[in-house]
Length: 101
Image (tube, rainbow, N blue to C red; front, side, top):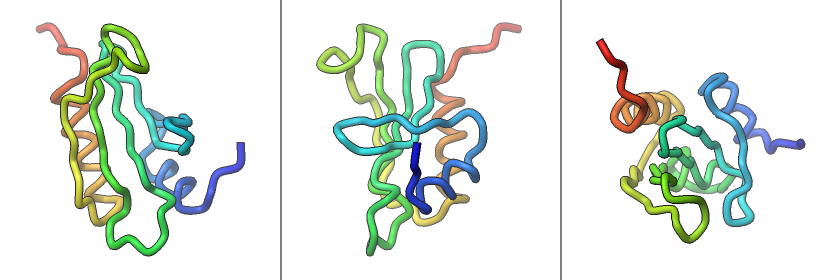
């Protein structure tokens, strides 16, 4: 799969937990949290934006994908890859599987 430079750079920076998935005809950075929640990073390839991406969305996909999926949180105005990574880590902790003691 050919990745545009901005998307490739972001994916390498974020690490192995993230992949590219086509969502609504756009190549997005994607992470399946494995518990019915997914994270989508949209707009990485947009030129001329002061932000690194358009938005990050957490999806509740526990009842299925497509029309059954429900957005539960959006994060906007992410300015750098470092801020993006920090926000993604926060969201993964908030919505990811709970670790039992």
